Image 1 (tube, rainbow, N blue to C red):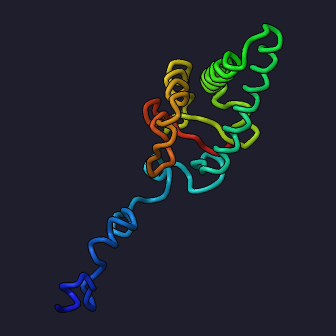
Image 2 (image 1 turned 135 degrees about the horizontal axis):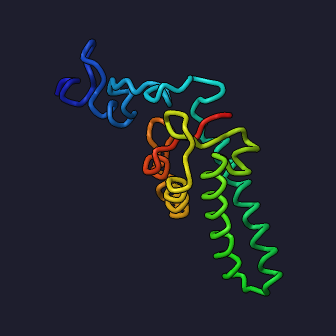
Length: 164
């Protein structure tokens, strides 16, 4: 068998077909651009698309604050631990909805220097913030990202998380 029959590329033949799909779209020659480029957002600084790190820290801060509020409510109303867990989820969803809809940022996002906007830079508004928060509570939509670091919850609400 020749080297070509065994899947070994020959000089000038380009990458093997497995190298293109195993390494992603960029290896296949697709030019995806940088995050936020197709929306006209800057590459860095204020208004640029936020990466995973700050968003994750902001999520932990928001969740921690929600747990604190739920813990206080649990003690005040003598709820069970399962009721406290549900209360944490509700508090998190309500604060994500109201603060994003009214201010464009939650407490955690503000501390991390982030805000949620429409791709054109406009405010999210309470209706789209509600849709975004409900999908965020489902968790899975927030785990599926596109090339602009937008989860399915952001795509559905036509929003993007950017630096302040």
